[in-house]
Every structure is written in C-alpha cells, then in structure tokens.
Image (cartoon, rainbow over all chains, first blue to last red; front, side):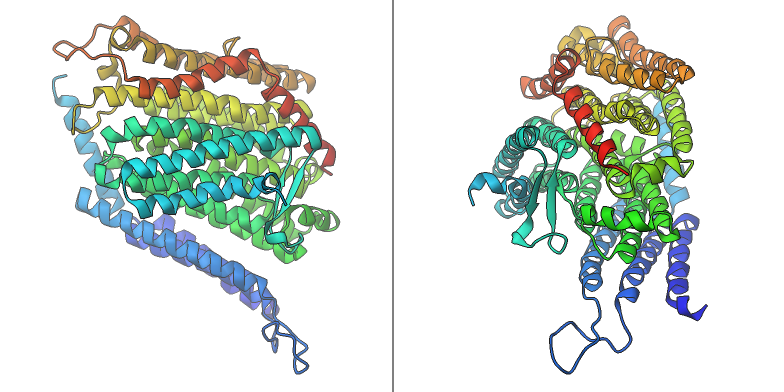
Length: 124
Length: 501
C-alpha cells in the first residue's frame, strides 16, 4: 500500500485535474484544472527516477547510487510545454473576455445563440 | 558526410528555422518568402527521401551522431516517407495561396506572426512523422498543436476564439494522455527509442502497465485525430479558422496523428497484442461505422459550407479507422492511401471555399461566412471555383476516376476478403450520404437564382485558384495513376504487418 504511495498521489491529482476541467464552466478554472492534470504527469515521470540516497550521475568514488537523470530532463521539456499551453490558454481567455464580456462558458454560448437568432430575423 | 546524408535532419530543421526568422524580420512579404521557401525545400527533401527509401529501404539518422537507443533517431521507412510527402506537399501548396487569402482575412500587422505560426505548424507535423523517439514525438505534437491553436484564433469571427479555446483544452488533454502512455512505456522498458522499445516490450506484452499505456495512447490519439465520438472540437475549429489554416489543418493534422496511431499499434505494441487479444477491432469497427454514417448524415443539415465539409472530415476519418479495424494488409493499405487521398481532396475543397470567402469579402470588411443563402447562383459568377469543389466532392463520394474511389475500392476488397459483405452495404450507404451533401452544394450554387440585389461577383483571382487546382488535379491524377499511392501504401502495409508480432 505505502509502496505505491506516490502513484496514489499522482492518480489523485490526475483525476482531480480532469474533474475540474469537465465540471467547471469558468475558462480560468478550466485552465487551473488542466495545469493540475499536466503536473500530475510530471510526478509520474520523476518519482520512479529518484532513488533514496541517490545523487546526480557524476562519476566519483564517493558515490555508488545514482538517480536516473533522463526523466528530469524529459519533464523539464514537458514543463516548458505546460507553461506555453497555460500562457496561450490565458491569452485566449483574455481575448474571449474582450469579445464576449464574460469568461463563463454558458454565458458565452447564450450570447452566440442570441446573435444567431438575430441574424436569422434580418431580411436576406 | 555529404549534404545528402543530412536530408532527414534538414527536413525538420529548415522549416523550424524559418519560423523565428520570419518573426525577427517582421515584414509580411519577407516572412512569406522565407516560410514559402522552407516549405518548398521541405517538399523537395521529402520527395528525395521517398525515392531513397523506395530504392534502398529504411533510413536511420542519428541526431548529433549519438548512437540509438541513447540518442534521438530519425527513422524513415515506406510509411512515413509517404506521409512526409503529403504534409510538405500540402504546406508547399497552401503557402503561396495564403498570401492572397491572408490579405483579406488577417490584419496587416500580424501577417509575419501568421507565417511564423504556419511554419511552426508544419515543422511539428513533419517532426511527428519523421522521428523514431517517443518523447520527441510528443514535443513535436505540442509544437504543431500550440501553433494550430494560435492559427485558429486568428479567424475574424469571435467564435474562432472559443473554438480555439475548446480545441486547446481537448487537445491538451489528448496530448497529456499520450505523455502518460509514453511514460508508462518508458517505466516498463527503460527506453524511448521506438524500435528498441518494441523489442523490449515483446517479453512483457500483456502486463497491466503496458495495457494501460495502450489505452491512454488510444484515447489520446482519438482526441487529437477527431475519431468519433471525440471529434467535438473539429467542426468549430475548421469553420472559424482562416481559410488557409482550415485547408492545412484539415489536410494534414488529423492524418499525422492517425499515422502515429498506426506506428504505435503495429511497430510498438504489435499487431497480435492490439488486434488479437483485445476487443479493439470490434470497438473500432463500430465507432468507424458511426463516424461514416452519423457524421455524414449530420453534414447534410449544415447551412455553412465549411462546417458541412468539416463534418464530412469526421466521416472520412471513419474510413481510415475502418481500414485499420480489418487487421489485414489490404485494410491497412486502404487506410494508409486514404491519408493522402482524403488529404488532397479536402485540402483542395477548403482552399476553394477560401477563394469564395475572399471574393465575397469587401475591402477591409469582415470575411462573411460561406452560408448557403450567400452561395445561391454562385456557379454563374465563379464557374471555376464551383466546378473545383464539385470535383473534390466527387472524390469524397468515391466516383470512379477520382482518388476517393481508389480507397473505397480497396476498403471493399478488404471487407470481401474478410467475408463481411454487409460492410460493403455500409460503405455504399455512407457514399450515398456523401452524394446528398455534395448535391446540396450543387443545387444551391447551380440551380438557384442569386439573391436579389446582390452585387455581381467575378471569378476568384488566379493566386487563389491555381494552388487549389493543383490539389484538385492531384485528386484526379491519383484516381487514374495509382502507382504512387497504392504501391507505396501496399508496400508499407506489408512491411508493417510482416515486422509486427
């Protein structure tokens, strides 16, 4: 049970993030959920790469146990991707706020429907 | 080493460099010239690689001379050289077109950003296709996706923003699922090199983490490739994006993710694990049928021409997954050839719709949506454009003499080979649905009177028509001379099935 402690945390974060994305209608809160979801994957990679008592893989007579550096490198890349996604998502939220005056999903949908209904009433 | 040996790296590096150069130089015309030159060079390199692979077999290129499985390997075989030609070819056609189209659809000050994003987008797509490293594949996937979100948000309608946001959320979930799958595979095998991973997975095939990886990968790719029922982002994204972007994304983005699916199923997980021990072919078959019938049916009732063909794309992706579900050389070959056959037809159609939109746009005005009430009687004013759309539509239906027919023919052969005669009926019904939605366009454009009081409109400019007609002509060409598509697809399918365990 406790041997898999880190995986339980990872999966909890993963599911919590996904739940927020699906359950919340606020565009910013959705992005928060997406970030949590992506962060859980960082844990999934990094935790198995770390050994208790392990050091960075530098050859030295003092150390014999090394942590695997590759997952850390991969996750550095994934963090950059995550930051870019979040930045782009927030930028889109700002633009949506400017265009619609709201960042609530249901209100945005309602406003689009009003426009569609109005354009149908115009004589063609 | 001579330059020719570095073609695999140049294939990705040249478009990748063109994007920051376009941003640095800031002038719309200069940015356009740089990215277009990169796209054409990439197309030439892709053809050279295709010829080389056809003659001498697979190429393995070691980035920075680090030996695989430690370094990143680019691996080009029959399958991905074929997809490389598609992606770079579409990019080479869309870029010259985008100049005239972007003038009318995007504010002048952000032109250079548009070209930079276009460059990054096809860099990412080429990278996904060429790489032999699992994590590298994810990075390129995100490069192409993030630039696609930006490109879609550049549409002038405000719904482009919400479409882009929706795509960003669903696309990022899909990409994260793919990383989870790659992470699980890495945990189990300790390698990221696809070929090395495949040999190490053979011993631990049905352990639970590997099965979980398969599940995560399948769902992630289904989100990215808009496989029914995970296609919700696609209609809005295609409808509200700028015309040139719709054409590029519709013709390449979903195809490349489907390529990744084929690659992982057959090369990594192995055909026996995916198709023999799991009910995946049955699930895939049912979902493909739903896509072919439901999406094509929904397409009939659309009033916006772009949205109509967007739903038709979901249906056409159904043909590709149907071919996969057969788990035979013929079925797989039909899927692979449909990547190209559908890509060029749909690319041509969206380019021509873009030509209509550009012609209807007044100077500095908002580009109007191509709804059917605006298109009435259009064939008299824009005969070439409308005729091109009809030819492209024939390919979607599968009329003999067009590329679409070749795919349908091989799909039907594969179905008969499996003694699934009822599937022949299902393919015919979905073709009839395609006839119906193409006929809706024909009826409106050819037989209806133009709306009273509308200004007479001329034919689209040649800058828009010529690139579109290159793709439409390719649709006819590949319907008659099938040596490129069918031979490559059959070869690739045989190699995949043969090497798969």
